[in-house]
Figure 1 (cartoon, rainbow, N blue to C red):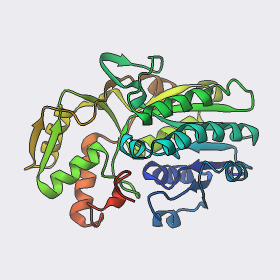
Figure 2: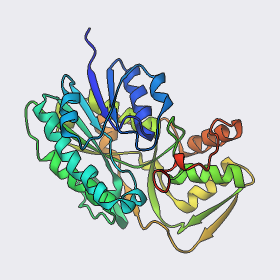
Figure 3: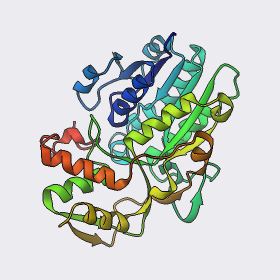
Length: 324
């Protein structure tokens, strides 16, 4: 049987490397296209895949790389508000313009399925609302605005009987990964609790949906494997209702998971996002249920730090912004 060829643009990143392994283990032939913005990733050599170093803004390279692939996943982006604020022109060029061009190129090159990685940040600050895929978007950051515009551009290419785009709006990801990040809320708190014994929670009333990196990767695989009539032209929030978490509860959970942790609270939020997201659609349509809890993610990072598996944990290589 011929294996399906799947291209992951941005496959050397925090989620990308986890996703690449997930798809290889599912029997696919995987190609990763990545510009290695955050440095060389030795984990690529551990995986049975083809690696192409390059930038998604290079439309010629994108077209050549897409050729022969039946599926494509677009993760490549400047990820997160701080990095986009540092590089606003590049954020628009990559997260919106290049994403739209990538989708059109995929359509022209005969790619059947395209999954675009978007973000629940597109919902903005929305108190007392249960946000579904049909809720109007109200992005409050450049990162989220660019993602929202890219969503619209990509979905405008449907319907097309030969091309089927899907948008996955990701909850905030956490958990141990080969290209580790410590600028994500859960991972940062786990590091501080482990190494300093003290964490600070700002604005404990804020809601934020969370999902483990391994579960996020499984969601992409499920979307690729689902019948086209369930996913073509569709948007799915990726996460679970149970992992909509208030920061105050996250602090309490962390203190219980890593005994001895001192939790301090601050009155002013550093991040204005505040939203409770419904994940009923992905659960019903794709039978998606996370395998990992937030406590699992905290504990695995805690153990990895104690074991020395993440050397120099305050290095800039573990950050998307403020490093290279």
